Image (tube, rainbow, N blue to C red; front, side, top):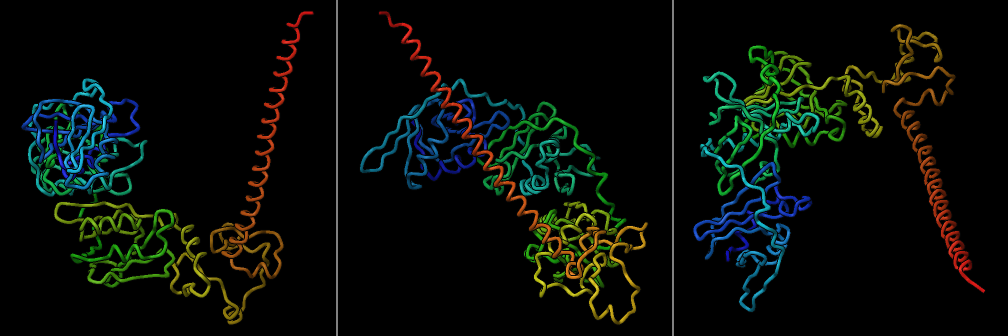
Length: 497
């Protein structure tokens, strides 16, 4: 029998729940394996990709045994009792002594031999620098979640470079890339470690890690505190990430950020975060640095940030910008508005691809539609590619030629003059009231009309579905009545006079 306190059991259950699935088809995969001797007690769970073993630090054991316990039953039992409660674990039973009485619960006891065997390692894990676990989490935070690009669904341990350049830890999703090389990895082959849930668990973030690799990088073992993780790696060729990293000599503008800043809150407070790609402009002007929302209505100077080089405005995803801030990268190298941003600090770097201005025009129009008329920014604060509508005053101050709304062109291949939101003008006669209506309001009216039509279509579909269901029920009722008549006829045929 094994005796362990609830407080010592909960860390094990929290980590094992990141590996063991309650929906696994095999019963043994919904359980944890308990291996006990008077000297050592361990709990292990697996999903056939990761084997997570936890060495219990405090326990009492008077036997040598191996058995399985359903994880969900063990979790529900631990939640019912205070942290100081001592639980007794044995094959097929969980019990505890509360002082006023003993509580015992019989549970399933699957065959321990059905549990998958943990891969054996000949090499012992080698200790890594204390910063490795933090850098590993940062690399996984930049990895892809797209299942069609599985090779990017993890962090690369790259040992392929020159020996004097050190080894790299890399993560990317194709839009932004993170790498760090402030350590030497004790492996012979490069390996891609998938972003398993347990690797992102906070319980592993604050303890030193050790690493070992076998079978030419196909298996990796990480020892972290009381945990030992044996996992499979991703088999595939990682892209040549070095070719997308800008050369520092190419930087024309450099931005230095102060330590301990709170720029993340400033960026997250700007409008437009709910739009596609969450666009935001990073503006360098006369040595100062500011962030501006895509409509140009809000601009906030980043106090303490200093810039050298030509003025520049570059648009990027605010989530990547705040991630670089949170990672503590304090230097930004810029080339031009269409080249990647290069964030760096002490052996770490992040490369972020900018957004094309043309790709965010629709987002700007959507944001402008949400701003009340009284809060619409003045024309001089609008981006250059959005021209404000002419007012009556400007129309009178400068003589204008007679205009025909049906044939008016903008001088570009005879194309009709576009609205502010990019939609073409209608070539049909327009009433005076409608012609004076701003393009955004006209678009909103069209959207309301479409919504009404769409609702009517939904109502019609609902009524049609109801009629079809009723028809099916009537058909089933008719078939049932016919079967009853047939049974009656059969019984009458069997009657003899």
